[in-house]
Image (cartoon, rainbow, N blue to C red; front, side):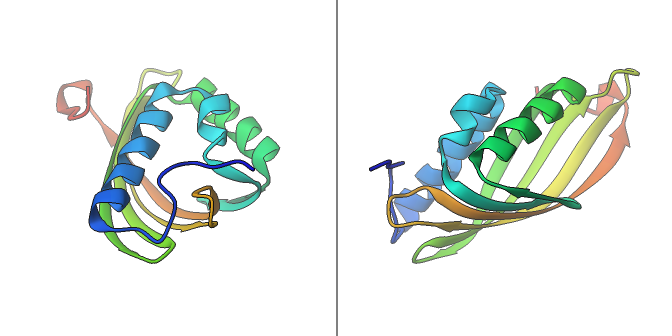
Length: 137
């Protein structure tokens, strides 16, 4: 049985821990590591893309990190209840043309009883920025 600690139901302490673990995993830029936090049949909406299953997650993340260079993410817990969380985030990246962006968004997460994320729904907006305006390094 796969597990990803801490499992729900969440307390303030374990919810904050879960968010930090997610931030750390995404900042590794390692699709294999990141994907292990999700159920085999996870459901995602990321911007306008619908992703189903851990294998599609890995493929998505490989594409993402190939085009979003120097990726750096910060997540913040906004709320939680039982096995669900709302998270605010921002990240910065540079595209292949050298343009920097800061992306802002919100995610809704739902976990199974083993602490694996079953659902992830993300709304994201990108803002072009100058390199001198970067906040996340």
